[in-house]
Every structure is written in C-alpha cells, then in structure tokens.
Image 1 (cartoon, rainbow, N blue to C red):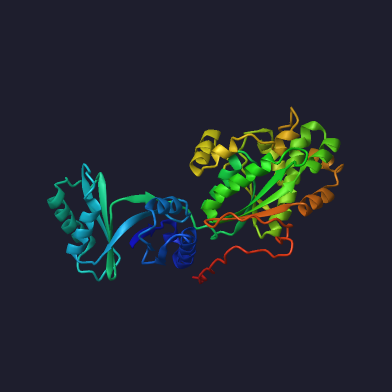
Image 2: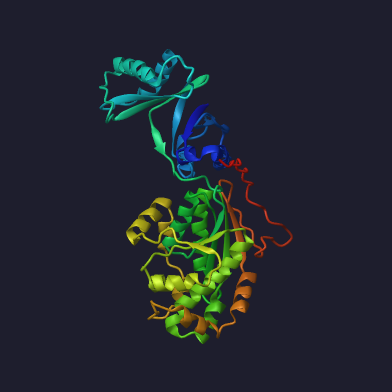
Length: 420
C-alpha cells in the first residue's frame, strides 16, 4: 500500500466552517475513486491522506484527482516513522532515479511536540541527501524540492507534486442550471461554476423532430465529459422547435433572436426551480454575437425572476477555446450539429432591442402556453461517474415510468457560525 497526500488551499481560509468543506472534499475524493482499490480517505491535520492498494495504477489516480475541485495539489508519498534515519531512507528511495541540477528540503511540522523544528529537519535531511548524491543546494530556485511533512506518529516524504483543479468542492455552493448549447462556450461556463462549488444541471434546447438528434447527441457527449468533474449530472432535453415556429409566425425577423432567448430563460427558470437550482448559467460573452450586446443581454435578463450568471462574460474566444481544450470538451463542441439557435436565426438580427419593443411583440405570443408545453415535454437523463453512465428518461418531476427520482448524495451540513 502507498499513500497520496492531498492538499487544499482555499478551504483553509474558511474559519470555523472549514471542517464542513473538508468533509465534503473527502466525500468527493472517496466517490471519484470508489471503483478502485482504495483502503481509506481521511483528513489529517491540514491535509487528506488517501491509502491505495498495490494494484492501483498511479496514472489513474493522477487523472482522477486532478479533476476534483477543492484539491490544490497532491503527491504520491512515502509514509515513514518520524526519526531522521527513517525519513532519510524514505527520501533516498524517492530520489534514487532522479538527477536534478539542484535541490532543497522543505519541511512542515504539524506536530509541534516533535523534537526538531522545521528548519532543523531541513538542515539535517538536506545534509544527508547532499552527502549521498552530491547535488548542490539552492534555497531560492531549486530544480527539485524534497518535501517532508511530520504529523503526530508518522511522517510523509515526497518529491513530485501534481497540480489539482483548485476552487471549492462540488456541492459546497448549491445548485445551478446551465443553458447548454452544443458550442464551445457553455460547457466551459458550467465547469467554472463547478469550480466554485456548484452542482450544475444542464438544460439543452433542441429542434427535433424538425431536424435530426445531432444536437442532443452532442449535448449527451458533453455532459458525459463534464460528469467526470462533478460525478453526478442531470441533463434536461427541451423540445423547442414548435416554440420557434410560433415565434417565426408572430415576431418580425429582427426581434426573433431576443424573443427566443427570453423564452428559453422562462422555460429554463421553470425547470431550474423544479430541480432546486438557485440561478441560471449561460456561456454568453459581451459582444460575441447579436444576442450578446449589452442592450440585448439587458432585455433578456428582464424576462427572468432568477439570477443569471455569466462566468465568461469578459473573456475572448481564444481564452475560452484554450479552456475547452484543457477540459476535453473542445473536440466535441466543434463537431457538426443542427443547433436550434442556428436553425431559425434571421440574417440581420437587431443588436439594440429595447424592452418596450420586445414586450409589444410578445403580446402576440401565448407565452404561458408555450412555456408549459415545453416544460411538460422535457426529457430527463442522469449521468454518473465513475460507475458506468446511467440514463433514465422521465418527466420534469424527476420520475421515470414506474420509478422515483434517485437523489444526489446528501451533502454534510455546515458547522454553524456564531455571532461575534
């Protein structure tokens, strides 16, 4: 068996609520590794230790832990007794296959009763390593940092540290609903909300059977990728073709894009409230397309009674594309589909629609009827990781024919904070 030492950063700033955040992170780590030979996951004085069996490939652990939000960094560590001889032996086993240009030892002593201070541990171990390998010491810009962490009863030694995803553990900040097209932007926006601790529901508007199921299939692929970051996902597939037909009949071409967006917001809001979400999320960016001018965004927001979050609002396309490539959603997003927004978009949409204009146009539409019908015909699919993806169809109340909703894992309750 070997150990993985997981460090968190932002969670350490949470004061008296920190234990609640740490318990949530421990739960998420257990879950992402649940199908592997993992003996234990436990919090230990400012860090989390994962004990893994001999048959678990380090590459699998590396891949999965790097996607867990709340993890600042982690390392495969050698656990050893706290005497200097044992720590030096563990360091040698860790370093034998390395040839750095320079090195230093960095010690952290969580056990303040330990006989040596952190600088004394660094000097003693550094001297032994230098004597054994002959490497020069560089305290400012070392090519290799040998880390030692001493806690009551044991110590951990490691030299290679891996970056985590950062942020807050998913589940810490409540639930949001993301309007997800098949494009590049909205999956990136969704993942940014996951990084802030939100569990994301996905809402995809499609025009089947007017067009093929291509956009739905792309949405499913994107949700499968994003589920690797939040472990449990729900996709709501909303038929929007008939709504668009009614808009084409009643709304002049320049106002149709804004009319579509306002109807999407109304429908998404209804679905979000049914699933317990507290905000809507979109991948909109100021000035990127006609519906995303400041004027049109303002008019779109006026249709909502729920907060609309736009995590990408000030980014440019190259930044968003780079993040999509890192997440693994980019190859899916650039594939061909028949997106409902592209299908019925007029050639010259208005870029500065006024609220009075769109409200006058919407008087011609049976808005309540259109919203009710779209909500009633929405199909739900659930996704899980690392267990095999399970899809379950049902109505918007979350029930499948003959069954009931399977809730997401219960989140541990926060420690109450006291006034003063």
